[in-house]
Length: 410
Image 1 (cartoon, rainbow, N blue to C red):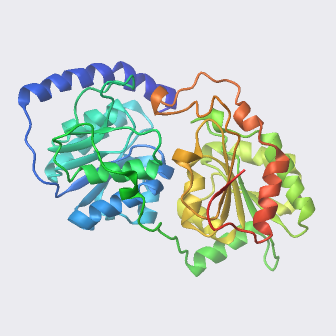
Image 2: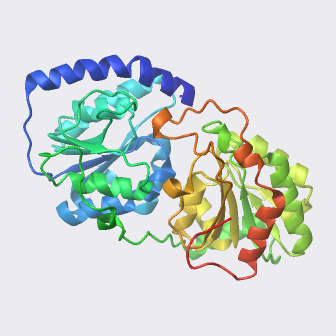
Image 3: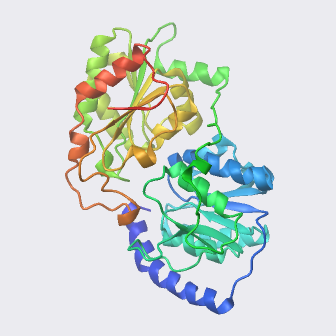
């Protein structure tokens, strides 16, 4: 389903359903058992799942890995298989391409959750009504999620047993960790949680992806002819999808950046990455670069494991704020991340080998929890203000070996 369709359904169906189920909850009363079998609910955004590693590790330390479950859209399962944070058999998927299959899988998954006696749901979606409804119908006696209290945030009823105050000042990884910690507390005070953020500042180490020798060899063969060498390898992720078009950096600037890199580094090789829906745009970008065999499009031609293997081989990845910026944190590649309508203070990569470029305009971030990530902006000056010179300088600094020990910001 398209992003716009999901928003319409979440609003027009979600609001009345949340209201009705809130009445049901208040009539039926509440009962609660200590968390023993915990499900993390994160329908969308694989990159956010990378940021949830600490939250999942905290829950695993309490109840054991075998008692952890995750529910995601089918298109977002791959990152869970790579991370291995929960057993593969405990990953529940919902098909999201068509409304009919979505509804059928939604109901089927609720039945599966009840049959597996899942007693706790941690809703990691930010004010999604669908996830609140799902949490309530699951039968879990402990339901942890964000609540708007007296704020003007999106309404989603009163379906959580542990209602968390959203903080616009905490990194998303910390928000997730707070949700996990709240599951083990008695909800006797509101809003939760009333302890310092430094209590979740010490995060569990990020997972490290390690490809096999066969995977490395196969990926090298896709980047260059047999016997050829490439140094450096720079990857570009134009992110031409329509999920959040405000985050895009112009294709013409990616092309100019690539030509600058090829000119400055005679043995450089450039790979253009992207999802299957971005394949045509990536191939057009390669033609615009006009770099011959030194430029190759891999958009739509890699699994997530193959993409991570590519990151392992590469020296630098240039991307906007999107899933690949977080996937790359599982590998040694230096990542240059361009932020515009969102802020790195909340969504920045956790990897130390990261350079952040963000103009900090007065209107940024305009995409946030407070507007359901729906901005009125149609002119992303925040991304247009990022010049090719700035990005090229960041790439050159990374290639020169001056890789910072902590994320730097331009």
